[in-house]
Length: 380
Image (cartoon, rainbow, N blue to C red):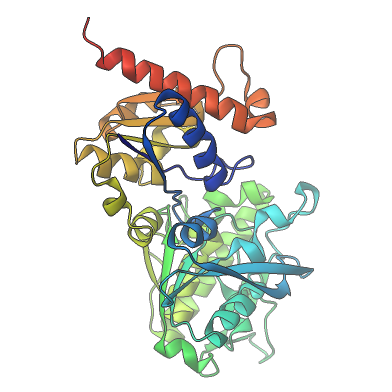
């Protein structure tokens, strides 16, 4: 019997690899003779770097750069096994997790430090780069990283703008002639799990700004700033990023990477699934276990667990989904190919309990889900 364990990170508690370890322990306890295959996955957010490097037998590298508010940070990037592709998790240099909740400031936060990570990848002679852009503290439309890589962003008086969300209000002209020439030969793929456009009610500022510390007034300011960037980019770069799906990801970084660096946007879960050879690992499997921090209606919108379930169920393989909790609309996930669903926070276990001892409760929830699947499969 072959069991494939393919969770994504349980945000705030377990990495995808740690979650896979806990699930694998429960699976081996239930099926001692099973061949248990770990295959951590991700969808462009936190954990994308680790999932890709681990699954492909790659290597980690570090670079000294600056964080979202300018302080020094050490950012990791990865070289995938095979030697042709690098992965950058932009949150390593501009992530919300780098800031205490008391100092979040999306008006001033910048992606400038991401530029140094991309340069390090280019210095190492990689020309295919996967960019996981989830988890940012920024709302600067990628202006900071563009400036770091040689794009000049001017005010009306000819001086440089501040490369941050608020600074985009002063943007009058863009000159991309100084962009690092190596990017002209590079393939940049943006891995995201959202379809939000750059501006408006479903745009970057309105949708993601509040979780980064934006007040209602800040949201209005940042939305105007991103509209300004889109207008100037259309005129000076000949690229219209105002309506592209995923352009609003990571505070508009999706749109900025397209406009400034010529990147393309793709579903992060599919990129990771291909990179980790998920389909090949599913061959011959009798059971698949996947999950994330919360399984709910949003999971169905091309999140990694849903992609795993879709691909497994298409092969007739039963799928167990285990989440930190089961949120609103979780029953809709049965239509995505899940046979059974289990939550860590259930009954006497609170969300706080589950987060305090995540590995223990994940093992228990996985065991409970496996028992439910066995009961369902046993003739009566």
